[in-house]
Amino acid sequence: MRHCVELPTWLLVALGLSLGANALVAETSGNPYLGIAGSNVFRLKPPQPPGTDLPPPPLPRVKAVGITTILGDKLALLKVRLPAMPPQPAQEVSCILTVGQREGPVKVLEIDELAGGVKVNNSGTVMVLRLERDSPGLQNPSLLPGLLSLPIHSTLRQ
Image 1 (cartoon, helix red, strand yellow):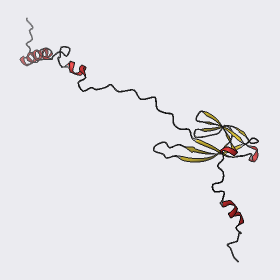
Image 2: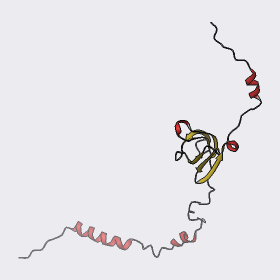
Image 3: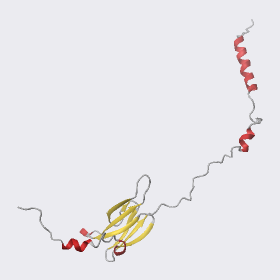
Image 4: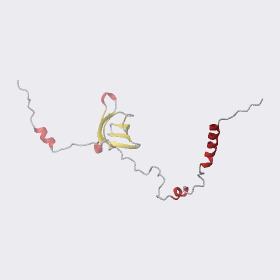
């Protein structure tokens, strides 16, 4: 008893084609066109790392407007002019802060109400602001005497 299995001819043909396909694939190591990419015909440059030589952003301008000790707490009245950061324009923020509080990049470190000074940390830069030098004085001092001399009349008549 001989057990011989006959394979269908289509299976033999498929096996022969799959083995022959490996021989038809060209080897890429001997490809003569790989030298073109290596010669950089179009003068392509590798991507540059992002620049670290950007200038630091400008510091916000901080002005001491006043100091108050209402209810026993020392409070500094500040005006902070934040620089423009696209897409937002520059803006001015008024704030009342106590020691240790922060408004954006500005943190109050110390308040000296007798000397009229406020020590702040402005984006890592420690600054001492004085009221007489840094406070925004009168906008138009020539109008002040004229306003005081005007009589005050009541607009309500009975």
